[in-house]
Structures are given as structure tokens and as C-alpha cells.
Length: 131
Image 1 (cartoon, rainbow, N blue to C red):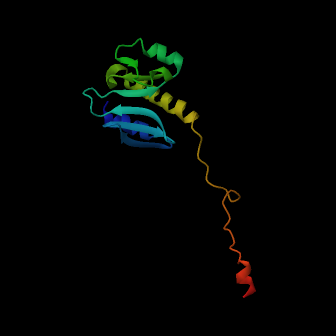
Image 2 (image 1 turned 45 degrees about the horizontal axis):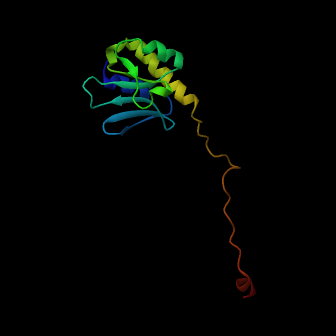
Image 3 (image 1 turned 90 degrees about the vertical axis):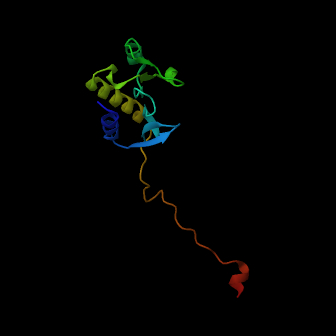
């Protein structure tokens, strides 16, 4: 399993975008909200994901998984390498992170006909009407 396979799996979800931020961190977002972060400059490439409080308690018992810096109190965990858990379990953790974040972000709707702003009509001034 490599960073390319993890990246490709993350990008397979709907409404997912990617971008570099904070140095060499690859952020994967759903509708603008981060659901996974890959550190490209670390020796073993760690990944940071969101989880549920119950799952976090289980994950923290595994060697190589720790609370994420800065956002750990919001149920984010960091895996020190992709080999900490089997590939199938890592895919499940990524999918769960995506679903947790996607559930809290509103889907953007296309503007409806009634919500479009109508052009304003320019009315002549009194002076222009007298002419």
C-alpha cells in the first residue's frame, strides 16, 4: 500500500478535492471540509482521520495510532504509517472519516429559477422624462 493508492481511494468518493497546505500536507476534502490528511514530508507517511468517540478508544489501543495533534479532542487520530492496520481496515477508516465529515457539510444546490436575481430596470430621472 502506498500514498498513491491511499490518495486514489480517497479521491474515489463523491465531491472530494485535494490540495497542499501547511507545508507538505496533502488535504483531502469533501465539500471544503477536511476528512483526511497525509503528511508528504515525514519518513513513514502518516495519515490523520476523523472517527467516532467509541472507535477512537479502540484505535488508541493499537501501537502506531495516537490522538492527532491539535484536533485529537475532536476525535481525530493519526496513524504513524499505512502498515499499522491491514489495507481493508484502513479503507474502512477512510470511508468512515469521509462519511462523518460529509454528513455535517451541506450539499450545494444549483440555483433554482425563482432564486435567481432578476435584472433591475433602470428608470429615467425626472429631468430625463421632461426632455
